[in-house]
Length: 114
Length: 116
Image (tube, rainbow over all chains, first blue to last red; front, side):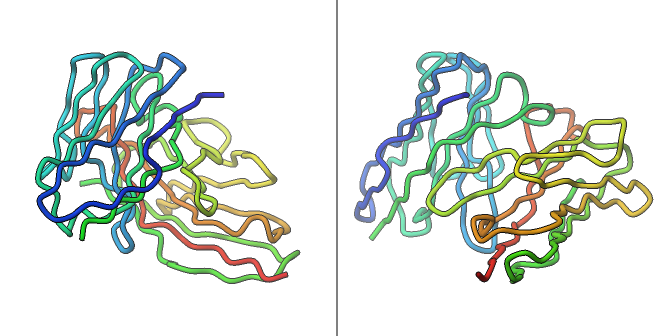
């Protein structure tokens, strides 16, 4: 069973704050994804990567940076957090592209920007 | 553009009743289709997926879904629900049209409440 671990599980910051969300997967999957989940919007893709050093822009990238440092680790960075970024964030991984393969999700990070 | 519609934001059923959660998609070809489930305070998990072949696909925990191309639908069914099935269910379709095999197009989800 693929394992995806997110940290922290909960985070509170202030407007303008700097936040880093971490994700590690232990099954050597090629693809990793960052999503945000908001009521009325479902899941929205922020950034994704298909390997170490690679970064692809998702559908809602504004205000977010991401970096894939290794095969296992994918980070989401909010350098000037805003209240609109209050959300539930999920990391996911898949062996090949998500369009044909199972996505394995972490348990999520709940971020509040005050 | 591809899209996925889950017309019911919330469905409430009694334990032991049958269940259908609706999903319709827009796509000119035959897409890859998925149902994921999100239990409270957890990430999403795959329930089942359809690529080709038998239009009725079996998933975990007694769930199944039927692909009906003429209706552009992929409804999720279960013969008898249990209180532990209470969760949010997401339908998703592959974004092959945009030339990117990395993405899924997600529905907004249906929250299922099973009353004991």
